[in-house]
Image 1 (tube, rainbow, N blue to C red):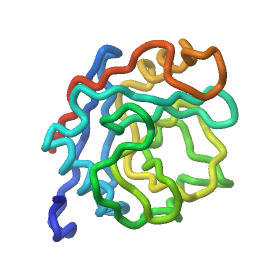
Image 2 (image 1 turned 60 degrees about the vertical axis):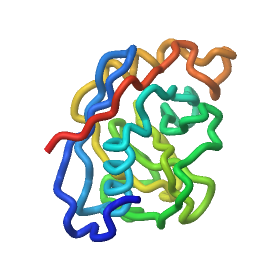
Image 3 (image 1 turned 90 degrees about the vertical axis):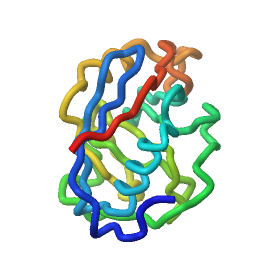
Length: 171
């Protein structure tokens, strides 16, 4: 279980390494302490290692979704926690800007392990906790998106397999 005292959480960078190269993001520990604590806990437990990113959207919203060990979009860690940081000033006019890392969910306060990486500004309601900003690897994320989906549609499994070999935390 994540650390009960989220005030003890220190800033960190998460690095996702896989068959695509590496993507790193700076965690917004002050703005989303529960979310960043949970993500760090899961990464340290190697929860994400060896999992596939299971969803890519290429029209309307522009995200790559990861964090489900089942690879189906319905898996999670067995716990949920509240939404945070929904008034983040970077979410202007209902847009999650490119480079945002946010939690996917099934409705209010249903956060678990699934997260998405925004590769192009995306109009979304402020219902998804933004908890990181990509600092390295936007080029790798864009390349994944350019390959499209397996079905050649606008929403589905990425055509290029996206395997998260490791997710590591550094301070």
